[in-house]
Image (cartoon, rainbow, N blue to C red; front, side):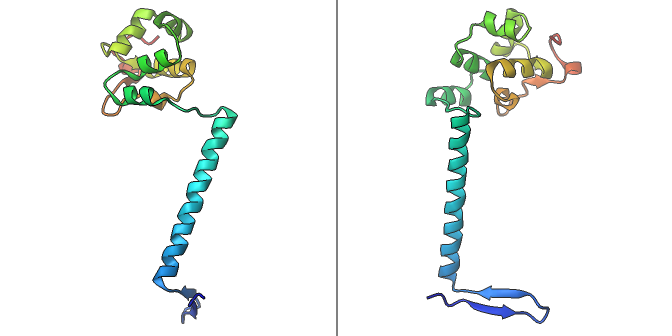
Length: 142
């Protein structure tokens, strides 16, 4: 039995007063429903091919010091030559991006991301500035 009380304020606002335990139970139930909805959406995206599961070994490499372009390229089973060709850049430029000797332009990194079938954001390392504007690139705008 809920001990809720309905109150109408002098300004006409309709309020409900209920015990704290009942309020906390309702909040927990709402959070559980949100978790179920998030899970269902993740499963829908997986089934539709809109998202993928990333193996733990790949996730650990992405969190480490390796350049994400190299990690994703190797995960996709592509050689430097194959990725460079598909992204319309030279293999040496791609190698320099992967080793951190050069930064990729926004346009180049977007092409690489498309070939790797990932979001551009997946190529940006936390705490690093790996992508430059085409006008400020330290390398050629490929």
